[in-house]
Length: 108
Length: 121
Image: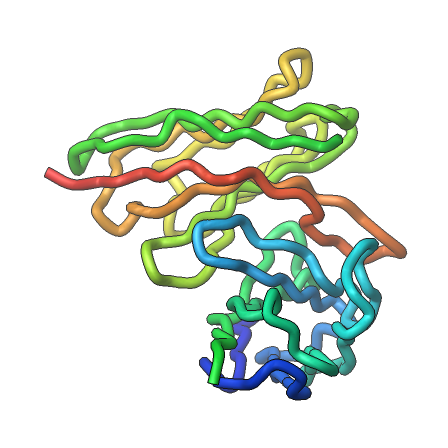
């Protein structure tokens, strides 16, 4: 089974900060990596697919990069509505896919 | 507008059963694979089960294999999850999610609002 890890597990940041979240797979998954945002009490929302492709309607301050085992999600300038938990998901072994444990971004 | 609406959650005793439903609208349901994903209180996301568009291919997480059954009725635009032999660790919000493929990559682009299942005596 492919295991996913994320770091950090949480971070505190201010509006306007550049934020980077890292996701690592236990084996190479090429670019089969998606990123989701989840706010409390809400369903996850797709941000990035195929490691670096921006989902339609998602602000351009979100970007993704990486391939193989190491991936990053970057928010170039954190906005108030971006405070949430972010999950990576590998789709290499689709339809059996796994999520990372999540990274909570809160207000400093 | 794509909509997924789950129902059927509630409080059930350990060992009991529950059937979740997900009503789909706004897209051609019969053309998409569908998934159930759950989230225990305060925890992360866990994939539970997947079913292909014509029900030909079905997959389960090891944690629910032999206890849960996924099914769909394309005529009713509905997805189901029959949960038997429920355990306390099955307590979670259950989401249905649409699976799609873009440029050869799978992703879950639409999610329901979730339904809470609580397993407790």
